[in-house]
Image (cartoon, rainbow, N blue to C red; front, side):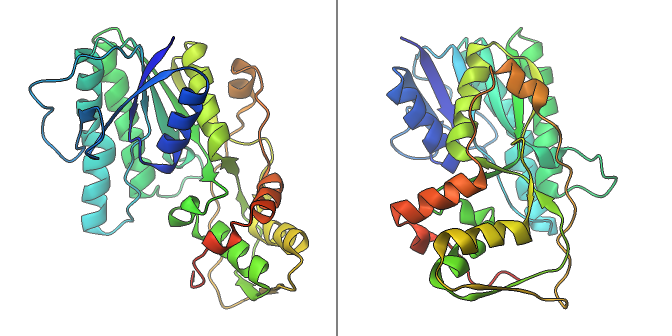
Length: 291
């Protein structure tokens, strides 16, 4: 039986990963702020607890993250929780004698378009650098999968993907959706597929930083058209010229990553829209006020 420790077990990805591991015979331990976690861990703290419960965890999966914006205060929060806290995660891994840490990174840590990264993407990238350096000193393997935009069928993703949530909400309710102009591409990855990729990365003993995107990208207008067709509730799509354009994002090719993971089957956004409709969970999506 395989043992694993999940950091950030209450996050959308962390919960999906815990379920996947448990359902496939793994023993799962958790580290986080919730009272029921096996190891109390506050990423805002300056140190670990002096005493740690002795557990066996050959694999540590790091799913915790801060998704704050770019105000001065929010930048400081992102830096503390995404970058500085990497020292705590690395120390925890070493003190538990865990030989491999797999990290949930983000494509927003790339800066290939030449623009300014968000504090979220920048701080996550610095967290990777700290983990790679700190773990490398103790001969612990480190792998980061830089995921694209994670979505789910329960509406948990709406906090981080508000436009996906709004599309589902408007089209399922038969409302008129006013979209900004432009055709900037987005790349969506089903959260359970992302969890499966992390497990495969562990089983394949991957090391290094890997882009982890879906082979198919889509612009927001065409995503809305798919939702309009699938829900068939009479919703309309209007291009609102007065709205600011969606910004371009860099979407790396993950062909080599998927090949390294034996090409797992990945749901498309269209597949997930059908699941949302069939499961009757569209009422969990929103908000209705994204500008």
